[in-house]
Amino acid sequence: MTITVALQSVPLTIDKDNVIRVGGTRVTLDTVISAFLDGATAEEIVHQYPSLELADVYSVIAYYLRQREEVDAYLQRRRDHAEQVRRQNESRCDPSGIRDRLMARLRRGT
Image (cartoon, rainbow, N blue to C red):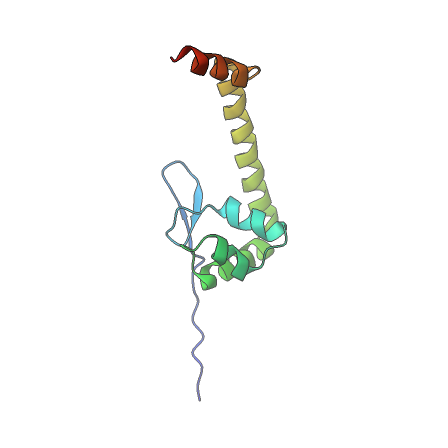
């Protein structure tokens, strides 16, 4: 029996917003790696995100383990960007007291 060894690409794509997604799905690299770092197995990740293929998740985890520094830097840039967006949103609308304002609006019927 002969085994053919073929190179396979990592199932990652970059969308128009420069977000890395896994296996042609909307699931982000951030999501898969975060779950993995929280202790989830590849099978558990696929169970939680059924649009993913098990082989793709294993491939992405292997990529992360081989390119940890590069992926960690990408993930940090994503966290920084999320924090920046959060601050911008809060500067436009102060979140303190939002529940009280919404409840008052509900009582007024508006």
